[in-house]
Image (tube, rainbow, N blue to C red; front, side, top):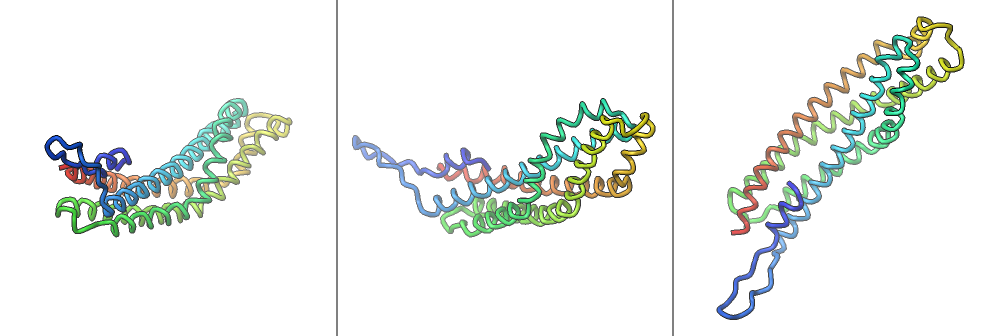
Length: 231
């Protein structure tokens, strides 16, 4: 639910009395609380999406280099490394704050639940309940995702460093030919562990996205229900 969507909901327009000027808009306390809760939820979800996008982009960039480095293709690997160099600092920062961002989201879901008010219609109240229920499922999945990231990301950082080391060695004549370069790269990176980490990351990301879709659908439905507050 966007802040703009709720902005239209927050202000109850006053009615004019005959020729008198319109009354000043009135904002009730429960709508202020609901607005703040929704804005907090939006901000927390957006930050987590940024975290996951940064991590996914860096993993994909490293894999892109790996696709050619494993064959000993130094020039192709060098051409692909700048994307990984740009992506890794953002991803590592996201990985470090991920658990904290999940906690912030969990708290924002609780705040939304607590912002429900008897002044809401049954449909409006149920819409918010639905958002809370789906968002809690999303939080649970994000916790699992964060656990996977905490496990695999240190190895992705080593993977990043190993790629840079391999390129340095390749450029310095460490390997006599492409075949030897490919062998040297394979030695630096445990292929079985890398394959396992890729599967873990992919599976966790798919489950995270499925939960996010559920929460997103509930939020879209709540947007329509809350718009009725305009009367």
